[in-house]
Image (cartoon, rainbow, N blue to C red; front, side, top):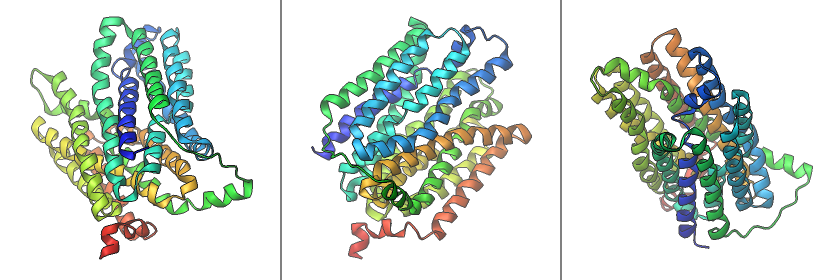
Length: 399
C-alpha cells in the first residue's frame, strides 16, 4: 500500500480523533458542576484531577501497547485505541458523580494511543528520506482537529447539552476506527520473543534517551504556560473583547503549528532532524522573550505565533529520529515510549508553570521555560549518541 495514500487516510483518522477528544475541553468544569460540585475551589480541584487522570494512565500504558504493536501489528492497536476510547467516552455521558468521571478518564488513558500508533504505522512504511515530511504532515491532522474541536464542542454543548457531546465524541472515535479498519492495510507477521531476547532488545533503545528527554522538555515547555496564558492575556489587555483575544492567544500557536510542522519536517529531511531540532529548541526559547516582555496583546500574539512555528517543527523531528534510531522490530515500542514522554510533559508542564506563577509571577514562567529549552538544546549539541541518525541522510552521504 502506498505510503502517501496511507498518510492521508491516517490524517483523516487523526483529525477525527483529535476533534472528538477536544470537544469536551471547553465545558469540562461546567459538566463537573452539573454533577453536584458547586464551590469554586472544589470545582477547580476536581477539574485538575479529572483533566490529568488520562495522562497518568496513558503515560504508563503507552510502551506496553507499543510492545504489543511490534508483536501483533500497529493496525490492531489503532483499532484497540479507537474502539476502547469511543466506548469509554460515550459512558462519560451517563455518570452521576465526579468520581465516576474521574474513574472513566483513568480507564480512557489505558486505551489511549491512537495518535502515537498512527505515527508508528506511518513511519514503518515511509522511506527514511521522506520521514520528516510525512510525519510533519500527519501531525497537522491532529493539530487541525485540536483547533476546531473546542469550538464545535462549545456550540454542540449549547445545542444538545453536555451529555450529548460525550455521546457524539464516542461516535467520532468509533468512526475513526472504522476508517482505519476499512482503508488501512498492513502486512504484519506475528513475532514471538523470549524473555532474554526482549530484555536485550530493550537495551537497544537506550541511545534514544536524549530523544525521549527532548520530547518531555518540548511538551512541558509548551504546557507550562498553556493553562495560564489566558490569565496572562487578561493582565495586558484591557479592551472590551477579552474573550475573543483570549481565544486568539490560545489558537495562534496552534495555527502556526500547521505551518511549522510540515515545513520544518521537510527541512529535517534535507539537512538532518537533529540539526532542525536543536535550532527549533533555541528559537522556541527566543520566542518566549517577547511574550515575557509584552505589554500589549499584539506582541503576545506575535510571540505565540512564532513559538507555534518552532514547537510544531520539533515533534516531527523527534518522531523521525525515533524511526531512524529504533530497531525495526521495536519501532512501535519506541514510539510508545516517546508518546509516554509527551504525556509526561503534559503532566509536569502545567505543574511547573502554575507553581512558578504562584511563587513568583506569570512572567517568570516564560524565563524558566526559556532556560529549560536552551539547556535541552545544549544537551543535544554535546550528546553525540544520535549523530548517526543525521549521518544517514542522503545529503550527508553525498557530502
